[in-house]
Length: 429
Ligand SMILES: [Fe+2]
Image (cartoon, rainbow, N blue to C red; front, side, top):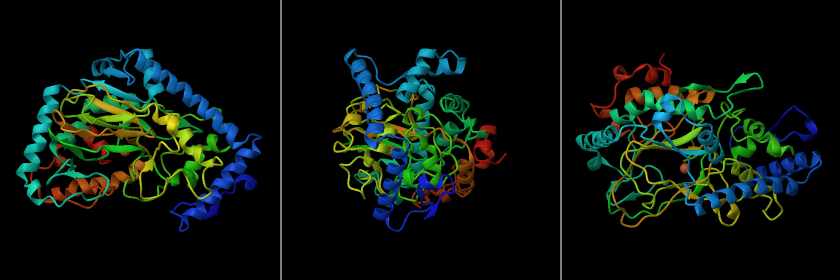
């Protein structure tokens, strides 16, 4: 543990690697944050009440949208993004809700061809015969075939990642964030780092228990590393009104505590591209479409009814849970995506709570390629070095279990097939 040299009386203790004594570190950091908030002349309860009020207003708006039969999720046509004709109203809704469906991001035929291409790629390389079961305990499998394919380097995935259409949407999403402040350029909104992730193919008739509500930006490191303490400075110093969930300051370089669900990259938005049509009631993604809910998640553990060594259940090596016990107000806003078609893409702010609904006897396929918006920044440049190696050798990227199915597959995407966007994204140019 080291102590920051700035304003020594109110400095927060911080741990740049996972503390050995987690309960002890939680006790220390909570006491220090409480003291810093108290020094502003406000109590933790007052500060939390401000956040709760702000979130409650959003929840009420979402409920009103639902009652009017309006889509809670903003929907924008790709053509409007490409032509620069997205309305101010649409952009305002994107920022208010922190999530988006892009209609027709890719032509439907293109998406279906990619889906078929993935099937050829895995079947042609004997994937199902050699499949050894899930490499991590986060996603389960159905029967002998997985739902999540630990496949990263198919032509379909790489073509989508390096496509002009993907870059166009990522640039729009990145530009919702403040990427320059304090004299620092935190990231480049026009250059993506092509974060490689997996594929999901869930067959018709599948039963799935879904995924509980959680968020992915980190775990205890969100309270305990110096960079995150600066990123969330307005939550921890009594100036909560100034907290801006779209401010990238101090978020793009700092360390993360390792864990099975970690993401080494800074993502402005998580996202996926649909490779099949999916109806809204077939076990689809839900979010709590309130970017400011992060303030609630970060401050809630400081209230008196939470044990001194408890962060409302957040701990390393597990997903950050959102629960009925600690966050009932937030979960009231949980909203599913509308029906999507192959070629549409779905996006949500990297801090937002999300879940996957359970489904019984799923109608139709549920196929997606996970492709986020991960703009070029110090953290992503660092990770790009690992990604380059994994790409060139056909290995699983270092954020994922070491499964390496594709190393011997002759038809994986090659360096010669990279275009300018692909080369820039991998840091090769
Ligand atoms: Fe997640």
